[in-house]
Image (tube, rainbow, N blue to C red):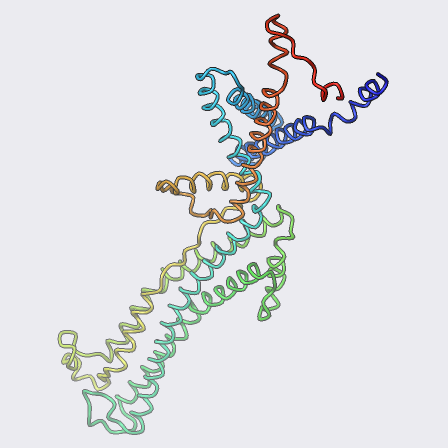
Length: 438
């Protein structure tokens, strides 16, 4: 009797470490973790729709209470689903409501886990892509403008070469094959034309080409610093402070990182507007001036293969097929320069990261069954998203497993015999040796 009394006296210490005690402890742990993850995910989703990105104390309390009720109802529905002796309709209703509450819990829990695992990296990766797209758009515009500038320079060089040749040898105009070298209206016309071509080329480069090219180089350096986490060696001294901050963006506080990314994106949008204004201001104007230059050494507008008869009496008119084609090519390339388009960017850390993950999950599930949801293109369901989904599922699966084990343990024990004995029916079950030893 003394040994039994002693065992009972220490049962408060050993009971928590028994199989039933540990299963109860684990079940409570999974329950609280589910409430925490689901509640924070649900709160972030609600806060993402506010201007401040935060909930008031009352809204937060209502969110926590709602989450607690939902997870509790999920556990109750699960218990009634697996409990022995329940009618079939109770099991059916329990299954429907358990599935509803479990989807709620897993979905919002996934958003919380994803924010903790990959929210910051997702924002950085997204901004790297946006910056690279911005740099690419500017470089494409600058490249097209540079091609026009190159064509214009070649035309100006050709005009200078032709003027020198006319002065030294003559016979550079198809409509005047017998022109002689030396001073004369034709030579003066050729040198004047070459000066105008060089002046137009310099004006095109200074007013339009160089500013676009310089800003494109700046944006490319910013994208490289952000993607590689290091300042490019070719970076100019004036840009190094910003590039160093971009290189260590992952180590910055979230508020400072938001300010940095937003300011860089806003600067790019400002430049894009300026570049597009320059294009609208200069593209057609320079193209028209180049076309006019081309017409001065061009053929008959009605018969491209012949000199212009209307200018036959003009001693300075020179029909130069090569030079005319080069100028027309430069005009075409000037018109081909496109507007600079800056991709949209939204800073997705904190509450907005949870919202992006939640709707990204919906889009991924919809895509799995062949339904395309617009607006989810920015979110890629990658390995970390799978890991976050697995973590959320693991919490609810832990609740399912432990509930099944506890119900199975209750059904296989002596609970049924005690219930019948309390009703006064059946014969008492004799105690087992193991029960006496316990």
